[in-house]
Amino acid sequence: MNRITEQLCEYALTMRNESLSKEVVDHIKMHVLDYYAAGFSGYEINRDFNRINEEIFFDTGGKAESTVLFSDKKLPSFHAAYMNALYAHGADMDDGNSKAAGHISTHVIPAVLALAETVECTWKDVFTAINTGYDFFDIVAGIAQPSLYRKGFHSTGIAGGIACAAACAQILKLDKKQMYNAVSLAAVQSSGLIIIDESGQECKPVNPANAARTGVLSALMALKGVNAPENPLESRKGWFNAFSDIKDLEEYELKKDTIMDCYIKLYPTCRHTHSCIEAAEAIHERLKPEDKISRIDINIYENAIRSAGGIRNPGTPDEAKFSIAYATAIALKNGTFTIQDLRNIDHGDAITDLEAKVNLIADADMIDSSGTQRGCRMTVMTVDGKEYSETVPYPKGERDKKLTWDEFKEKYFRCAKDVVNKSEAEKILNMYMELQLRDSFRPINIYGEKQNEQYG
Image (cartoon, rainbow, N blue to C red; front, side):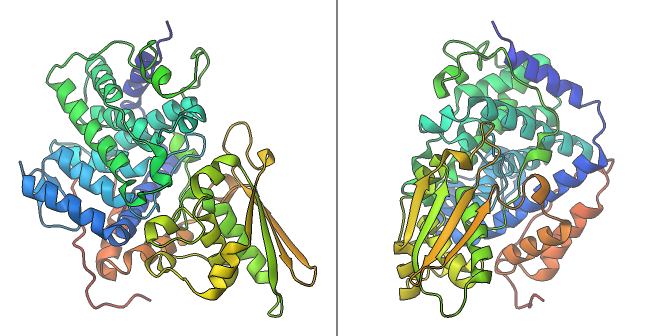
């Protein structure tokens, strides 16, 4: 029988004694800061859902051991991990991996940071744990895709608990048997349906939130000596058989530092809309004032149509995050798409007219076999017969289109400006930029509600 669970755990244990390269450390810093940026946006955009969860978890209480963002309260580590993951996915601004077709920072980072508050550790321990979580998620979910998605599962939740358990096992310095049990416990608890991209989108953050909590709990139970099922991933009754159509696990790559392959998003929408936004931005620059658009054809891969092609006139920010038509219309009219386009949905005649002219065409050429190229070709036609066409093979933030630090900081402060004052946002940024791996870990909080301080 294939030994993927054991091999992944052995692989993780070797990471403890290895140095992290400067390039990997820089990537981890950017992705951790991006987690905060996503948290700023998610805290604001998904406010009603967040408040309901705050009422439940704050009223439940418990041991005050781990920081909850935007609050002066502390909760048990697994509850704090849940809440902080919830915030980070509220605006769909968090990072992801194209092959794994899911998000990572939103569950791995809050799980690691929450548990790190309960033990003595260094930033090297924290960064190694985060790196482990990324590798587990990208490897496991990457193997299972695309069938995992086609069966109706959300990899962010389904694989996220496994990734968080492995990451938390690193923070607790569990031995091989304990780490195996933590991963197995998390596999048993895997959950998360992708139906949340059709309706009830405000509930989508519950998937990474449950993953973060599952990871912390699984590692803590393993530390206490719980013995979980053997072969949790590879068994006939295991994870891969339950959540995918994968039959042969003989060939897979235990790829290291997969965070280097992960993207950071510029727009507060489902990743499937991003190539459309970029194409529309480019065409916007070439349109003439006298041009009257008659038709918008978008050749795009099938999964994008399934996830974000069904909503044409969104009524809420949650629906707007999953609407190719709305994202395209806004970017064609305004030249970009920002968080303000979610906060204040444009139902004006110009946008409604453009939304109605969007025609989505399933095109297998817009995605490659590895799943890492996910793009679109947009053709805008005018009433007088002109055509404007733009092809975007993959969105910004990936491969040779990685964000520079200047581009990232622009996103970071844009996300922060309606939630915290600039000095607080700068404090968090500078702390992560300047920290040394040998330094002792210390938590940092964000106290919400922006003060009267203007951003430049």
